[in-house]
Image 1 (cartoon, rainbow, N blue to C red):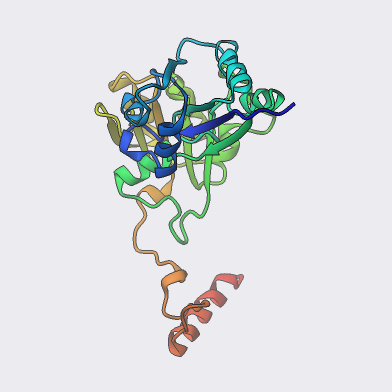
Image 2: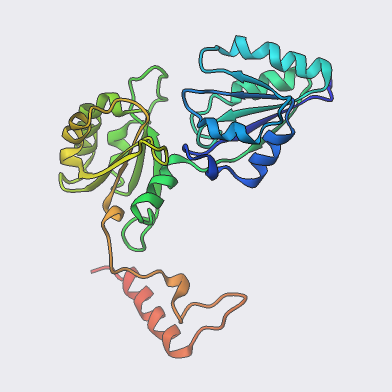
Length: 274
């Protein structure tokens, strides 16, 4: 079964309406039906919708409440823009909707959005992958919530890597988050950031440490719409990327011979074992 209808799953970004991508704004402007969650998405994104577009607030609807809209789109060849907060690839409940739309014969497209963890990194002016400090970013949430976590995906296990971690959907159990981070091996003084409603008008971003994370959350009475960033990269300085070193070369740039030799010596030192 095929249909002329299309459903676009649009990432609205972390909050600020001007963090929509150009593609997202175009898709919203062309849609016959715009579905958005007023509890999660800034109303400013609706400024891009056509005056005659049907606007549906999905904040109080289960997926069964949205399904009739997809069915109508399939029957009438309509275009739907389904707006999700952040990026649809992360905790967006998108996969089940993709499956439903494809079963109806609808064409589906996804427009990526700015995630809150990158927005918070921008707000605090930090790179999350600092050379020689952290070269990985773990995106996760605390186990034991409404949605079960697969075996082996526990915060304390991820914490053993000691790299940058972004924790979503976990503010209501900040004490447990702190305990798991410490149990996994993050030192008590590891830098942390607590970010509430990042890029929204009532944004609150507070720096703390793993050891003071619970107290910081409780001091500000936070329990939802809050992201945690943790890891040594949040305070690291003085390291240099090899990418922009004069001794590094690539298709568009030659290496300086002396700097190249220096870089080779540094790399050889990294691989030596005592």
